Length: 109
Image (cartoon, rainbow, N blue to C red; front, side, top):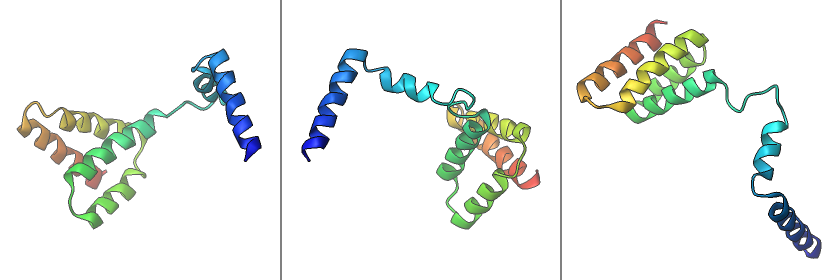
């Protein structure tokens, strides 16, 4: 217990001396070849968030997720651009049309 407290105090002192960005810089520099998040992963997350918010049928959502992971990078980029339109929802009709196109592309591709 005492060693854990000492370690935490030493860590706090190091962070105070080096600055709070120490942890973030070291985390980013630890693997320079691997980006923080790939564009494909970002696109898939966008699409999944829209699907989870709009779809209520759980089995259909699972099928869409499975299909989504088998699509190519260009296909996910296209569907992600439609998901951006769904999220904006300035006009509810255009958001509905974009969602309809998203689901049609996931089914057909």
